Length: 182
Ligand SMILES: Cc1cc2nc3c(=O)[nH]c(=O)nc-3n(C[C@H](O)[C@H](O)[C@H](O)COP(=O)(O)O)c2cc1C
Image 1 (cartoon, rainbow, N blue to C red):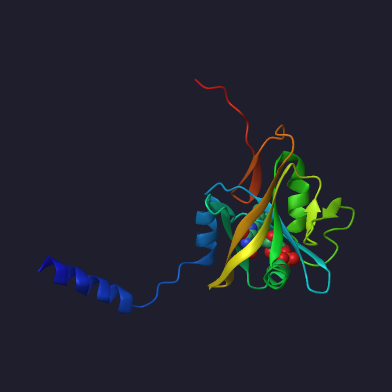
Image 2: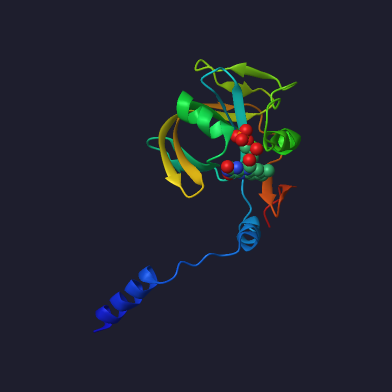
């Protein structure tokens, strides 16, 4: 009996009117979740460098080493990654906040006056970052107005660990201070 009541409930929910939360409410709710920030770079088929600031990035698996993040369908970095098949992920810490805001803008010129070298795959590696990953695209899945990208980590670069980490919260960076254990 209980089973059939539950089944009716879920059937009603499934067939009921689609709810559509206010976008600003969604932004505010998502904005209350602190997240790490990375800059993802790649290269378009015509050799133009692409890069975007991303807060949807997270680790997914150790064996095999996988990462995941979402990019808007309109992102030029998304089309570069989809056609090239390789990308780099740079972890934003305190010294790279301005650079992260630059890569959050649209248009060309993001790489002007930025130091980088090319990976063996031709992807720009930003030398100002201590921590970055070189990845190959494992899978892409359309998800609403974004694409979900899963990448396989091919190489990890870890320079000094002295920079303070940052978190993106309520539309601005917060520097994470180390507190001694109580
Ligand atoms: C802190 C921060 C996090 C962001 N995270 C994402 C994200 O996860 N996915 C996304 O598509 N855009 C994200 N953006 C917006 C992109 O960085 C922005 O749209 C950028 O212009 C994309 O550049 P492109 O079109 O050259 O790829 C974020 C912006 C900021 C400031």
